[in-house]
Image (cartoon, rainbow, N blue to C red; front, side, top):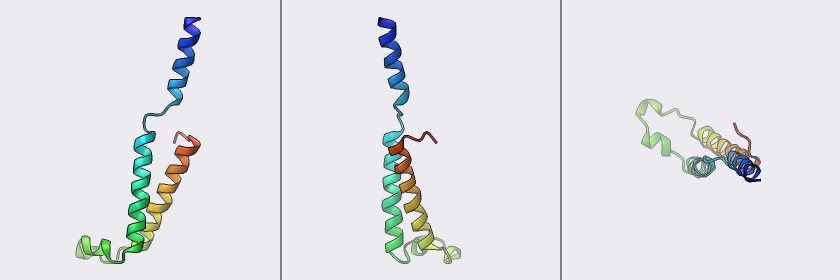
Length: 81
């Protein structure tokens, strides 16, 4: 009886992922930063080197938004990748 209970507890613990908090934090920060870059024109150009003046800011902001949302969706659906 004790072994079955221990096996069940171990299986439940193996399904929990310790990286959920950090993954969610990274996703939220990515979404917020992507939105900030998308809304504020010239932010990356002002904070980057002069030779990076042709950065596609809107594309970078949109990519951060999309990747952050995909990360949150993956966490919600419990996809391990």
